Amino acid sequence: MKPVLTLFFIALFSSVFGTSILIPMDDSQKNHLKAYGIAYHTLTREVAVDWLLNYRSGSFLIDYSRDIESECKIRGVTYELKNDAEVNSILNLISSPAQNMNLIRMEKAPRVAVYSPKGDLIQDETDAVILVLNFAEIPYDIIYDEEIINDALVKYDWLHLHHEDFTGQINKGVYRQSAIIESKLNQIRATNLGYEKVSQMKFDVVKRIEAFLAGGGYLFAMCSGAETFDIALAVEGKDIEDSFYDGGSIFLDFEKSLAFENFDLLSPDDRSFSDINVGRGWGGSDNGYFTLYDFSAKWDIIPSLLTQNHENVIREFTGLTTAFNKTLVKPTVQVLAESKTKPEVRYIYGELGKGHWTYYSGHDPEGSRSRGGGRGGSRTTDLNLYPNSPGYRLILNNVLFPSASKKKRKT
Image (tube, rainbow, N blue to C red; front, side, top):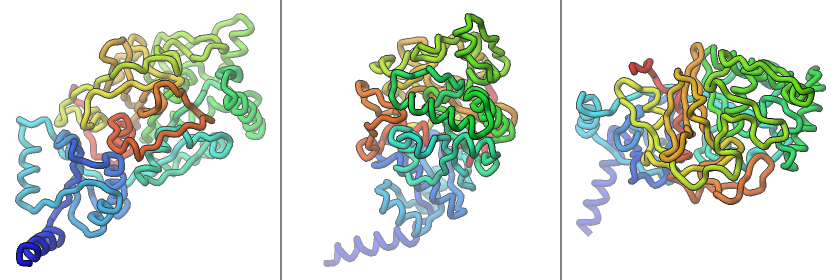
């Protein structure tokens, strides 16, 4: 019995006297996605979390508490107990000028909002951000046009946009039954809110989101939410369909858009919105890989933070906006990831005023290459099958982004 008792007391000693909890984010981690939930849970307890950029693929270091250790066990998250000497060794390694590593302290949990039509359609069945927030057990509120127009954004730090048409085109996407329903609901909503056209309502929403961003908010947009938000800024609320069918043209003010310039709009009858999207919808680029750029964790802190991952080559996935045309990206925009074989970018970052925005193309990082999907779809990705998804990790990097103490890029 002596060896058993010895092991018992060693385990007890480690549990009680371990000074810190290290949550590794390299290949030793059993559940990368839920690990972000542990970090968020810790922040809600007003306990700081140190994000160790590039140390074991972006690990988290937390002062020991039984609550955090228990949460790791309950959620199936791999963790290691570290004493003072081991923690000092890690910190010395990270601080070394020879190492491309850094320590970013997080002290406050961001208030998260998701732009979604709530019960109008089955948005939460396929929205990748809603799926991963639920899986990671990170709380959020769902808001839509009414709430934004009534200035609800002041209550939040971080806003997500997904499978959305901010240009307000009635005919766009009518090949989907859900889009027909959505179009009718948008017209009803616009009328109820006092707008003559859906495009006018959506542009008002876009301008309020832009103001939220410029005032210090964090915007994360995926799929068509990213593309059409930029288009809406450039067209400034003009009715694209009226101009097209009347044989006219719309002036695009590229000074107003965030990420793209010199793009052309496509017919309202086309499945794509513009030539920003080089993937051309669900049948586009879905058989290759894109690569995350490598940044200096000591100087290029923000892009380094946003690209933390245990894999730097990620399988491509489709969406209504599958990939961004590299030639149309503004020179002031930071490209974070691009295709290995095609002139496409997948993940980009920029700033507006005091705020930060990130665009991520595609709809579902683990979506079936053949199934399509989208708002109103009935096929949902089960993240229990993908707890270590590198594509979904990029989303969660953005969720924690507002919590991190950051510096401007040097390069």
